[in-house]
Length: 244
Ligand SMILES: [Zn+2]
Image 1 (cartoon, rainbow, N blue to C red):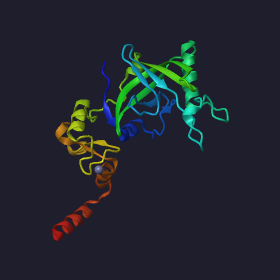
Image 2: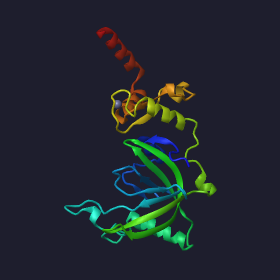
Image 3: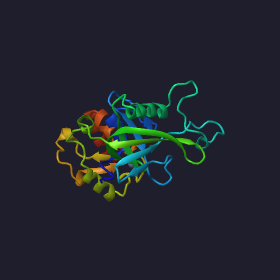
Image 4: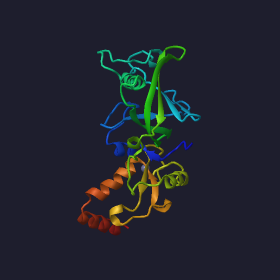
């Protein structure tokens, strides 16, 4: 079983999904599917697990928001908000139960797994097939069960785009650049930067023309490309050559 399907940066996830993902559970954020962020890393906030024998993902529900002195880890994970609206836990739970009881097709869930700071793996789409609430020893937590999709609609790739940097290239670039921005050494919010823009004929994507950039340097680069007028580039060049 391939554990890491495709390695992508957080900014790429945001760009691909078209929304800022500020929390781990996002029920039907677009018309077609839900999105969850998960991690099995040591020190991860929730206890998510891959079951390699079945391919199932077991995903923990989320805590109440931190408020005052209350320890969210000591409180039952909530089904509803104080006003009675369902939490994300509640929405996923009801969808899973509806499927289990034969009232609805399984909800489709796009899964991203955090591998390291700023680096994620696209695990593709899953079906939400079951949910339970059980004690973890001190309190009740939700456990959701998701299986890799088999339906044609769900198996459809998210992005069929030749500009996508192949996984093998990303993994190699990540290793070569030591998981750091090549300009400042930052390990945060890294982005795979394709050096030669497609519009300028940078067609073949190889490790030679891909590098790691932090969000700041990636933004600076795109700002330069987007907003600098040609006459300004000429002025800059003149200043640089004079001061040299
Ligand atoms: Zn940087």
